[in-house]
Image (cartoon, rainbow, N blue to C red; front, side):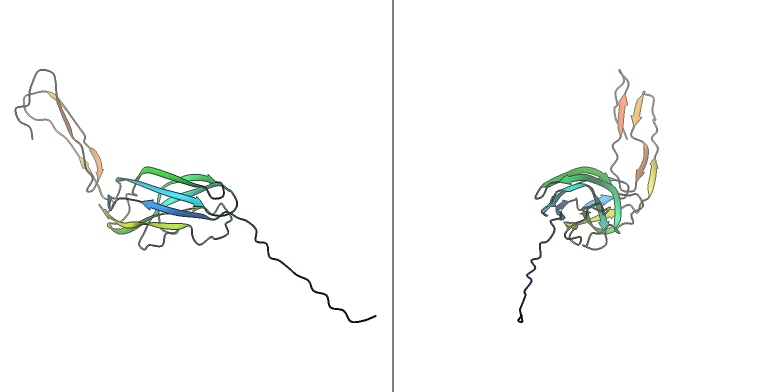
Amino acid sequence: ASNLTCTATFTLISPTQPDLVVTSVTSPTTGVAGGSINVSMVVKNQGGQAAATFWTAFYLSTNSIITPSDIDTGWGCSFALAAGESSSCTGSITIPANVAAGTYYFGAYADSKGEIAESNETNNGLAATNTITITGSGATYTLTLAKAGTGTGTVSGGGSYAAGATVNLNATPTTGPTFPGSS
């Protein structure tokens, strides 16, 4: 029988989702294509919901922004994290033999396969604070060992190695003889 005013009030309630971030990455300052380096990362779920199993990978990049389109080292770790939880991953990885010599940023990218729906999909990558200089250009060389002289024994350590790799060689005499000098 009269004019009325009706007000509807809406309150936005955001869905709680995981938010995966790499909080630290460590790497050496030098490496050899085809050689091994020791690396580590820490990943955190800073979101409000648990994250089921996801893959976090190590990458080499020509810039400090780490993305899954960078050079994949083929190594990483699988995580499942509760809300607020962090976990680390440490290991010795092999730099791909086909990586060109140069200076790179080494980093990690959380959920590199896109397995988890996150509240923020743009904060998953992080580079180490230092760059890494890669030598070797992916070339490999064969080291062949030979014995000489009148004594007997064995030599070991030969094989195929990446350019610039450190190689350990062993010369072991058989019981009895001595090495007055070796070369």
